[in-house]
Image (tube, rainbow, N blue to C red; front, top):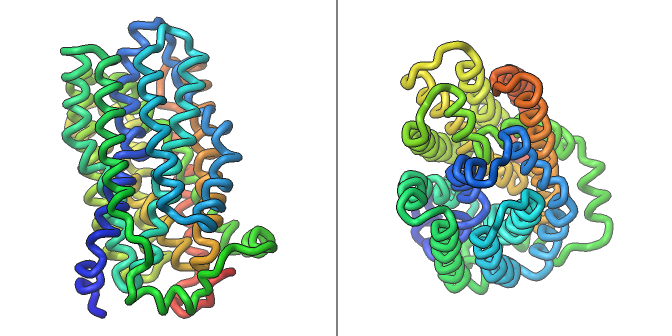
Length: 406
């Protein structure tokens, strides 16, 4: 089957996965930063205190391998439906907050767990099952969905909060994600596409078995990917819950920061499209290195005393280029180097490392703000860690004929 023919044949699973991922955890990474200044102002929380929300990812860690494992065993539909039904109550809880930071941490943790059941960890299996030749581009389409939705939603939410308050805005956002999530579950195919089925069978798509974790942990390649991702994703809190605060620290107003956030979201789309197309055509290690290295330049620019709107906007665009690629890459690497039978199990472990990295980064942000009352020192540290992590990806096998693990 041709490259574009595979895309045409699998429109339904592609739309289902895109809609599911687009209204789940990746979208919330964008919207969290919109609510942050208003919550801090209304409840009197400090910026250093608010930065600690990233530590909640530590509480999420045990659940990610579990979600991956049950997805391998029971399929995408059951797991995604459960996550969709549980996400809306979390947003209702946000709207009822009265100022307890502990309650906010509990709700944030709950959303992280249930939204992981409707994010890339679960829905990208649909791409792994139905695509071969156009797998990189299909993952790009799926992971572009949150950024495409974020471009209009970020300024809309900012205006909505000003008009009707952040409580009603939380309800509106949660309801929108619930409806879209239910449509995504309905569109999920019951079986992989016929063209992909034979390939799935050859790869060994039987149920997971004992010894899978031992096989994964004995793989040198698994540890290369895990360490590299950990170093590259220490930046996560800077472009999720802390982005607006970081941009305001650069001297921007709330509305200007929201505009830059939209530019950043556009960068994620450009990065994902370029990365997805490149992964289908060029050596995986080279594409991964280039894609993950770019934000090191962006964060270095933000750390320097060059606080003009144009430079800040360009720096965030550079950051977005990689953030757009990282979710495509981690899913692609698992599908590229590991068999489908352990796809979600392996992806769950790697996403656990990414959550641990994000939590570690949150501690770094909180310490930096408490010690220096500025994001700048942490920006230089992050630029260095991303550079080191990016070079590690060059140690992965270049040949497409290498035997898959598992």
